[in-house]
Image (tube, rainbow, N blue to C red):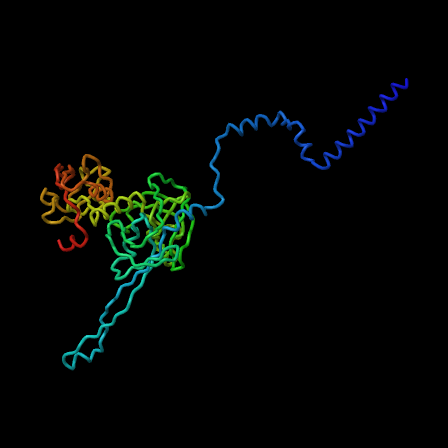
Length: 392
């Protein structure tokens, strides 16, 4: 009996001491209690929902900030300041001509403009819009790091509104080039430029449309439409994607005067920019095919003429004498419905496809002269520059 009491007393004291020690441990390290506890068992009703959540396709997380993309691209976007000397003849009082010979009065003033550009290689090649540097006597470039230098013109392509400049300084940032043919409507894009001379500014939007043409902005049009804010001074700047890769060169907005549309801007696709840049660096200009005629889209009445079936192609609006098309027998008023065996959609399509032809090659052309069909093979020559065309 005495032994039993001794054992019971010992066990009681052991339990009390153990509980005290456990209390002290939990009070000192409460996390140990969570670590030792069994995992929470989800209710059976939520098991199906949990399985569905695992099976559901995951969506890419939306970045909370585009700062990394801007940091990657912005150093290669430059501000461009141009100046040109304008000489104008001043108006003389009407009576001055009554007193014999006189020297006409002239006055001069400096016209300044601003824009943006993008550095695309370590050699200092800058891409911008042709209208930014058109007729400029001096071109000054300011880098994002504050350095300022004079730039020279390497070449211009008014047909796409692209100009290439050269900047002769070292240690230049380079814009990473992306692809414009993979852009989708709804993709996020950022515009970087120098609006209103405020220095580098970033705006954000989406791709509103691709393949925009027939806007009257350039001969060859295949614009990216975006609602990222593009203002005066943004021309020639960068349109980048959410990763910081260049996808376009900001070019124009629709006229906002008198309450016009907002949020409709256009950029030249980087794939087109890449090709034009390579040609200018290699040849000083862009080499394109040419037949010597100017097409126009026919009116509804013209499209309804006998023998003309939709799609009707294009009508020859004018033609250069002694050009390949003229020598082959094409005349103003003719309809061209096929080029190289493929149907011609419209005037923009015709001009773009002819430009892609290699000078020296030949192309099959089909259409109608009046009510008579014709098929002919025309030699392709190099498209003259605008200055050469005017002289011709």
